[in-house]
Length: 162
Image 1 (cartoon, one colour):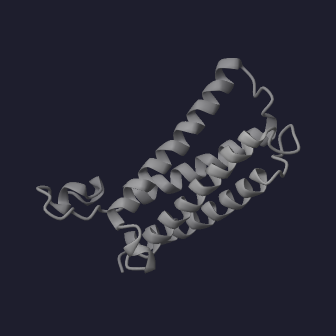
Image 2 (cartoon, helix red, strand yellow):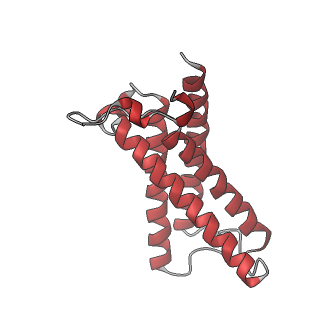
């Protein structure tokens, strides 16, 4: 097994744990648990449903990381490698975009506002998730689609191209 594949497997394992923790915390919040910021739980049923939806996204993200950790594993029939890599890229981009928006809001207002230290911790956690999913999505070779005009070489990371 190549060093790159071993490293990506470690990143995938870390991403699985990131997703499990993310999903558990969001499920707790969706079911009425306090969010650690300024309240004792979601303010409304709509807020609980929204956080529940985020929980489902976390579970899907965990499945994506699991399928990339075990490329020939049991999830292969559910999530193809190509689809998993694309979902990892989208998930990583969404998490990083959320970090940019949050930090941009802090910069624009000149303070952390009501977010305080818990907001910084949550933002740092999202940053780590964004980096992990981005590494999984961009750090591996996308398999060529059947009937594709492109070769697998066109999808290799820049470090592997000569």
